[in-house]
Image (cartoon, rainbow, N blue to C red; front, side):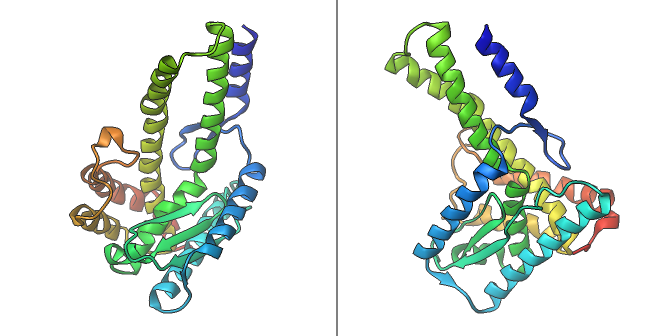
Length: 267
């Protein structure tokens, strides 16, 4: 009984919400724990990666990073709200890997864009759509949330083994339990993170003065790309299908333009 009271207390004291969507989160690990690890990992990554530090694409990603940083900061300042990026150490690198169609943003604003995705981005607005989505993951603290979920599930596993059944789970039972937690808990959260990042990314594009309609075109190009990785069935994927993604983005664009019309291009 004590362990369940402890879990309930943890849930109550660790609950936060995401800006703009108000989705509730369990956050067991603070930025003071996550950011130093992310910054070290990013530093190590840069040592190993081949980086591009000149040219139009490089200048574009620097400009987009700066515009989104300013747009997000100015919105929270204008609304007199706590800025979730206040402790970010913003940085972006362009990685020379033409066969990798990817981009990411670590907790704390550490961004990487791979040269392989530039063809799908096609233009500055397309790059902004991709970077806005990745920055949204960091602003919404999805990485910290996933780490917190893993910690909580580990605690639940120990509680199940020690207090409920009184002995360690068998290997077969453990596999069934891991299957349940992965497909029933962890993956749905990942899909919700991707949908949330799509929505927030559009808002950040709007704050920064970029063309939101280009986000639709990016995912249309992605869906047409035969080498794209988003081909697995949606149930088994952490990303929504391109078809659903495009549908959502098309429906959100007029909503965001109306809801945040006074915050357009505030970078």
